[in-house]
Image (cartoon, rainbow, N blue to C red; front, side):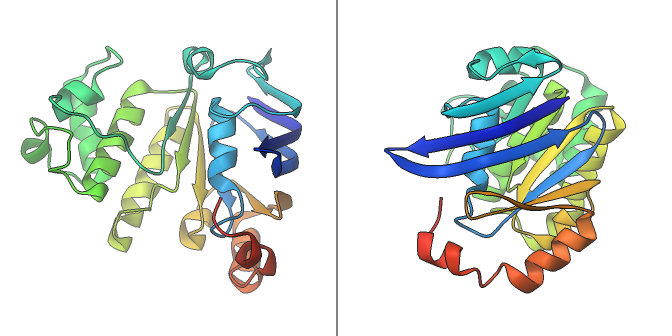
Length: 236
């Protein structure tokens, strides 16, 4: 479905990612695990088209999208839930999650349940600063599920949500898989990374390790939280 070969990304003359190789198949869940500062969010934003690449290719559903922008990738069926959700003034939750024109009341009820929000309490709320970061995050996740994308990228969905909500995140990822679509979760939470079908570990600007989720999660937990590279580079 999505294949990335030899990808390199720089910002203001500074190399952020190098020699990145990824392969995502249809109907599976993938994790990209890494410490703060390892380049996870840069990778997520590059895949969806926010960042241009200097080298390499990106193929989605047999289409070369290396030079395609965000809109073109969205039309092909790619979307992302950003680490920091957007804020809006004067728009309700219902209006926001149905912006794509798709509306099914049964689906909406299920998505609220999956993400752990009370439908009756939130459906008519405004998507603005009266909502907490965790509430806005969950609403954005509902909006992504409403799109039914072929490929959904979740950039640290556990960020801003209490740890008790990790089962909700797992339920969300499994829903995407049940629909026959592909989910990619960017995370530094080894518990989330352990429940996927295949895992990648990013460090020192590139993919350092890939394979079975439990093995990658265990390696990360033992070796990467004290990574000298991340401590030296800071957050990216």
